[in-house]
Image 1 (cartoon, rainbow, N blue to C red):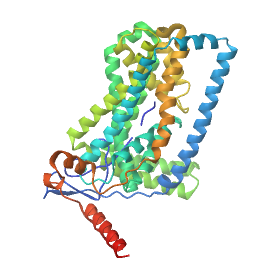
Image 2: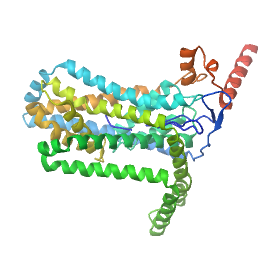
Image 3: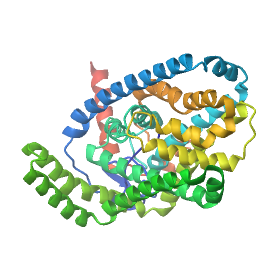
Image 4: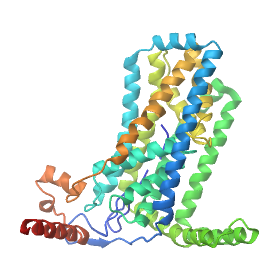
Length: 434
């Protein structure tokens, strides 16, 4: 399974630590304390129309590419004479361990949804429901897996968030905030594993580990660049405008509409992304909770090879497998092909091939089936999920369960919520008159 996500911010009391929804004006936790949230305005043309169609086309191409890879893989097994050995290895698999591996993959998805729920819960009047969030997470899995370097994950999730009632600018900024936190979790997890197991890596795998250190360094630079955008937006804006002028002068940007688009991105969206992140960072407790959920999500993914090894009767150190899993995912995410094709295979055989022995090919197939093929297929029907009843937010529903009603617990309604309910009552009254 690859990686990606999103949600909005809430000024004043706390903004979605890593993801969130975005009501027009969100109340604080107690009645009588209201705080306004800056409204984000962004052109929607590239996000909702062109971007959506481009990502669907890219996903279709990715699916065809991966189908071709599978076909070539089968042909290779047949003509290399390994098919019999491959089938023999599969016949020895203990399916109980395979189902446990599938359960871990389910936890990966559940923790991803939970990261969104944390943000939505903080925003007491958010219109986004749990089914919406499941669809957002599924969008990241599906489009991320079928596009090179998971490029389709973030745009698809932004589009899905706008369908929940969020302003496109809010959805973009809050998805970006979530993306930063997820990338931070990836780098932090890898750093911890390298610090704990670097000596083991060199002793077991030799100088090839240097490649992983280089990949880790690239991810670190990406994370630093994201933080620079968030913390030093005016510097980024000046550098961005200088780059646009240079590209226009040398003919890279020939159409004026392209120049206008990138000018808007630099002059408007960079500052909005920065504001969204800074607002979210004010709520450290939610930020840390989301980071903890992200780390648990990544651990669920990285431990799957350990279960696959046990399915073939191979005993291995759990922490060693967890660390190796982190390195494999880093390598595969750096390969510019759908599904990390090439990087996933190379990383798996480099770190786990020796443990599997003659069952390495079968082990790879099961690992790839559990972490990539099955999640992609199962995510497809979840894309259309949506919350049908938006009269009560997740927070208010929780208050109903624990305190017998949200308003009795001190929850006040925002102007958006009030207007929505008034409109619903009007429509209901009109239907009764007819």
